[in-house]
Image 1: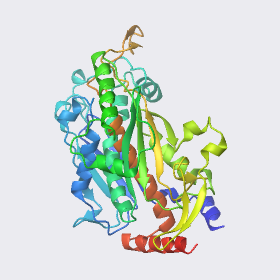
Image 2 (image 1 turned 90 degrees about the vertical axis):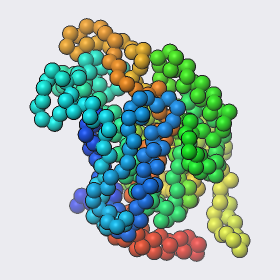
Image 3 (image 1 turned 90 degrees about the horizontal axis):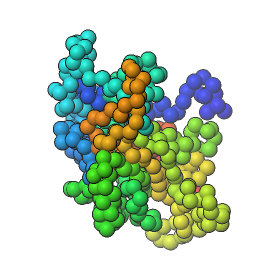
Image 4 (image 1 turned 180 degrees about the horizontal axis):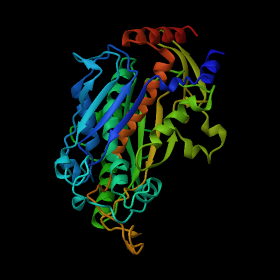
Length: 405
């Protein structure tokens, strides 16, 4: 009754942890806002900057990554290294701004120095965005639709990760495939965690031989002026059962995660667990059989497999949550496809600007951020708390309840 009444009066529990970003690809800065983070969270600046560094890595990145050295400058909501319960604002300066100040000024500026995007790129937001906002060309569309925006999400996603760590939950990613080269089988958490410790990121694949073949895929695309996509998997480790709910369609954990990962630039499909393969398999081969174990060290329900990806009926079931993002190839090509000039409507080649060839590892890091933010929202909805200590006490009480089930 309380939940139904709350919904009638406009309350949405998903607003408990709110976030949004602002900024353009070649603007002065990106800004991210996070509201609802409990007080008392220790904010590790080095950790946040490493998250941003990870997003910039990977074989096949473009020239922009040689310019930017992203660091998270926290403007509010944190004092003496601890969150204080008020909204957190994070600034990421764009080093490339110095090359665009005259082309993209906030004030009117000199129109002759503007750099229009005169022909829309197939696969990009260029044409759809220009039609929607009645722009004569696509410069302003490119500036906001660009995946550069995901850096802001990674910054606040790092804060969500630090919060989840207080509950013993970890979130990481690895690359499943690049182009036609794919990793076989489910990869254990220890192997994924080992990737995080690397000081050099190639394609963030746990198997060295497969990674070299992935590199060959990127090399072929680079030589032909093309781009290549792939699949990343985000794994949330040590998630307790009970996050999310089947009570309402927009509160189901799988729906929330699917929307969060699909919102990333160039992601065109999302899979949870063995979702795609399960559609072509009999139920007896798909559903994870349940057992119960009891010993001095452990007592609880167990599964022989994790085809469900850690979620059943919109609720986490205690297994690892596994979410895959299917990333289309980058739409800016060195060998442009056919397009139409905005002004003349004549056939031309699509616009080209400095771009990447492959961004699958970076997309995985952005995927981690979105999964972490989603899980943090669901955890706060379930456990509440105005301070991290209060949240942790509530969480530990829930774990005790599970032990006594």
